[in-house]
Length: 409
Image (cartoon, rainbow, N blue to C red; front, side, top):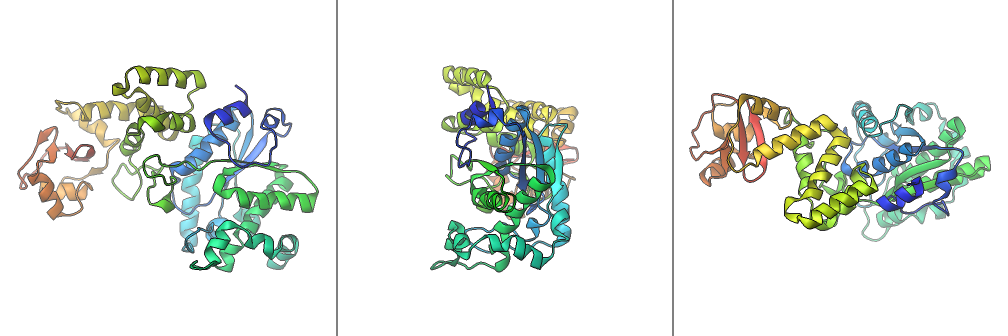
């Protein structure tokens, strides 16, 4: 399958300046860049969709330049509903390192060039920037952007000059990378298309050269109808929190997220979030149609997506653990518990089971923990516990409800 065909088949096609997708198959300059701002120390599965599109280009022979926005991350990409909170510079630096590592894990290529726009913006003179870039755009053109209109229109929250200027800064990134590396193609999510078009305009006006943008649609949560992302409050993170720290997603919960997708969404998600080829996905879907109760497609999706982000070994381990945890009759060996500790949140044993539930995040308070125990919603190593004074004196797998697990050891 050619690149253009695979992009369309997987659904990696939204707005673009490329008139005929087949042009992508014959381009002499097979380079592209994609960028992410370090607004958090992890990307989400919303970002992952665009990264999977990038990986598709890489599989077809394109060289990737992957940008982590140390400069733009200090400003913040404007949201439609309000000003972003400025991040401390130390936090931006930490976030850059973390998401740079995540990007390289997903884009499996020996020829990745990582770049940071702070490297060229730190020495730019403000007057020179206004003369070189600011003069190329009219206020009418910038005010016509939809998100700007939403922010300054009736009932809008307003917008700072810093965020208003964001599109010029990102546009300059494309211009700089064209000048430095000859890059003429930028990949992005559909919500970034306008900012990318600014770069095209700069390259055309300042260099009298052609550049293009290819975007992919935003992935919509089939349950809520909202896009996947941290600003929507429904983020599934690529970083794991298997030590129970932070607000990230454990490998176990990451796997379960995909496993619990509805039948009507699974084909759509298989194409985006896995690297299975067309024939393999067709075979998976055919087998699923014959025995939907076995959830063959969901299992393939969960394994494939987890492999992309956390590696094949982790996907195999969480698959085995899930089968063990959800077995009707379960007892756990010491090895089972040790294996679970590599996947699930882990906490040191507390004085009582009530405290264990709170410390592992299975309950938000001691009061709630007691309610769960009283209702028969808590089990320890596969045995239901109704005694709130229970004390654990050995490592254990805790379960609350149908699918919440943790390890106390």
